[in-house]
Amino acid sequence: MTPPSAPSSDVPGEYRERDRRSIAEFLRLEVSGGLMLLIAATLALILANSPLGDGYASVRDHYLGISELGLRMSIGHWAADGLLVVFFFIVGIELKREMVVGELRNPVAAILPIVAAVGGMAVPAIFYAVVVGAQGGNMDGWAVPMATDIAFALGVLAVVGRRLPSALRTFLLTLAIVDDLIAITVIAVFYTSNLNLLALFGSFVGLAVFWFLHHKGVRGWYIYVPLALVIWALMFNSGVHATIAGVAIGMLLRSTPREGEKHSPAEHVEHIVHPWSAGLAVPIFALFAAGVVISTETITGLPQQPEALGVVTGLFLGKIVGIFGASWLMVRLTRINLNPALKWADIAGASMLAGIGFTVSLLIAELAFTEDMALQENVKAAVLLASLLAAVGASIVLGMRNRQYASAEGPEGPGGPGEGPAGVPAGDDGSGGGAAVPPSGSEGTGAGGDGGVPARSGS
Image 1 (cartoon, rainbow, N blue to C red):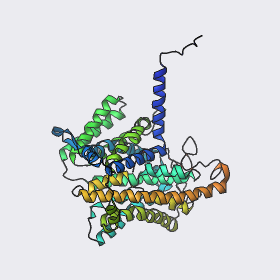
Image 2 (image 1 turned 120 degrees about the horizontal axis):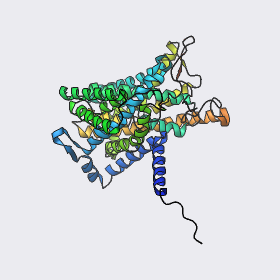
Image 3 (image 1 turned 60 degrees about the vertical axis):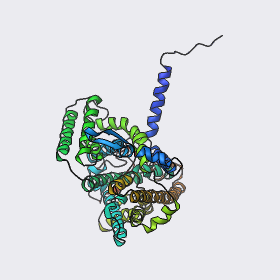
Image 4 (image 1 turned 30 degrees about the vertical axis):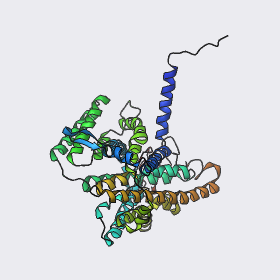
């Protein structure tokens, strides 16, 4: 007897929908963003250093686009100026949310990671300037070692630090948000040339229209996606780096739900777009940006090249000195205290973890050395080397701390059942311990914990 067949109507569609949702949820995980970046960067290095290297370079440098609209670029530039805008759109959403409902709403509660972020960007730039200036090198790359790739950093933290206090994740996330804000400002101010004021004005008009429609409650992707593309094209033609358009549009989205809304528009849109950023936009950028030809001469020549040495020194050592030093001085010289759940060894590990530059560092390297491709390639190799050193060093330090917390606290994790692991929020509300403790008598009113910030792909 033939068994009864299952209803045939929608089963394949249900499976496809389930698979689609499973892939999207996977790409929202902290580990996934770092993993996709690692795979893309590794593939780029393999292609660039294999017999397929010439074909890889030919594809990367092939020009596409519409010249009449000023949008004819190489495929590599389409990845940097086009697809990477999606990543910066997510960054803009997170910046807005942090300022409205997150850690940055109350600077007193977030002052320690804010100061740490400033130190972690200023000191690497100083290290670069000192090393390169002393040897008469090219100073245009001073901003390359400033950035932190939070997707890689959180991925490493989630893998090696499952028993670390969640307050460390909060510290790193808040630091990364400020890091992104400063990096965006640096790109907009210092890496903008030949301003087209008419196109820039047009992009501002487009942003104003976007804001007006959005806050009037007008709905429909078919309105906002074409408008966003127009804003991006105008921003690109203005001379301001096109990724700034993504940040600006992201920050225009409303971050607080209105009556009757379960989620704010920013949360809803981020939930949809984040997998595309983590799984497509940033990995494709990495695929074309990280394809550096590595040879014995390249490796041995890095210490003799001031720009490359400045980047490695800035990212690997400058981040540690800047973040740890600024945090320590802040605690020593003010009434701000380190979160009780954290130890200085944890901050040292996080400082080292912030030395993973990658996405934004590679982008700035392309902007800084557009006229010297050989130098650009060497600086990119230095970014990859410094990021590798930072990842390995942080894994060792935080891995040791993880084992210490595990042995001291037992199966319930650091701080008992109320304290979640570093890679996972402690509760549904994202709470898990703030980054800094305000002085007595000035109780903070910030969001605390993880600030409701989901993991993101690349900075």
